[in-house]
Length: 628
Image 1 (cartoon, helix red, strand yellow):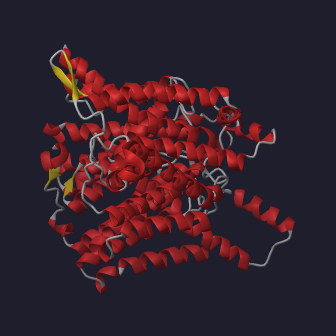
Image 2: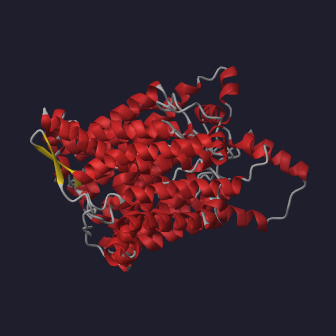
Image 3: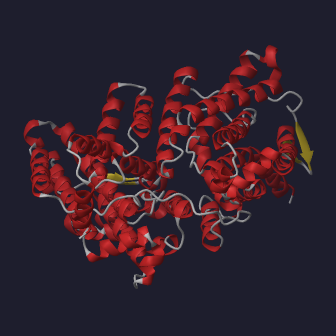
């Protein structure tokens, strides 16, 4: 019994830092509606800066002063980021802000390695808390008891700040309805800046306080951000008390899950998150918010089929790509095959986002399920490659059918977070079900048959399937089903009034997108010759989002161009420089700020500017003909 009590206290100590980071993210999202993927980067920066101040400048600030100063320094960096970067894109779609903060995260990861080096850094023990306290024969570090006591103190201070100050009242009002706050004459610009500063300060302080408990390394950002998203969603966006309760719940599940449910310990928190989103989408302590800005894709004019010139251009590009084996070596063909596979993956998500208006944060689940489906059929069942390629993606289809049924009941960020929860559940199963999936060792030896084994043959296979997948998705876009899906996206009430079953239409689109992603995963398994849980991970889902947004979510060919540019640039940078993430992240941020419509959107804007302007009557007639 004493052991479990100590385990409970350890969970509470972990909850303290998690609460600080999650409360900061909850405040930022509640007011600014920014899905701040860089929040984990600020947590990591807080730990690094605190390490430097407590180790090299301990005489100037002392240990505890160094902690606070580190959080203030990182908060100042956050203010600079908000003013220079985020303030420029506040009025853009939420997912563009996700893309910008993702690019910022990539940059910070390389910057900390450049400044502090790649090795783990071990901080000193906190003065006055170097020993342990005996609890019924079990020792618990005294620093953990300090964190347990600190957590409710911080909660109380935050509660007073938000309940008893004018600034806090404005923040709570903005969390519920930003437009009304603006109508009352509040300067939103500086309100957003101050909120971002407070949120970053809390994240950095949470990172700094972890120095005596954990090593500081350059992977802290991704390790913390997933748990923080879970806490914020369970507790409720904008709710400090919800963040506190959810942080305790998640930390205790992590502490006891490995003891009580060792085979599903990683899944527990995501199961809880999924159940909360299904039963109470706005979280345990959150409130139903005012309608958010429109989802990317909703501003797209009715797409038109390719004109004769565009058809010939597409055919010419395909023929040019098909000639690559005659002019390039095996390495270039392998890279080309990977790019073609990710074109399929990005196109599937683009279809869901642009036509369906549904932004999935867990699309890699169906990519990975398709890869595992092929591995099971080819490696374990011994089926031929053709049969495996045809049947393997059905596992992705099945996963999309099950998860999509629940996901489409929600919308906006809640839909996105539920897809993330489902993807993490699948990843956890693949990671822990070692007997079937091989766990972290994966499934090896998934090689293509002789007819597709050479790099040139596999490249042509991948290119052909990519062209077919994109063509099929375009056919669906311009089918009656595609128009019904766009109607549901643009106006759910009007589409329902004319007899369209919006949820069924969206679920069908979700299944289609998941199946196409499964096709990409099946090819990827044969390309790599193996399957690992990483093919289901959140980083791959974010990659897909980056490809779509980088190319242009409001364009027809954005996914294709985005996948080609992102993968080619990523692979090339890795071979050319050790700071590939810094350069790639900077490129992503530049695209978001300078060309928010993406690469294809930028090119279309330039092309339209060169065209002679049409009279208003001609423009209206053109749009009517396009819609028809």
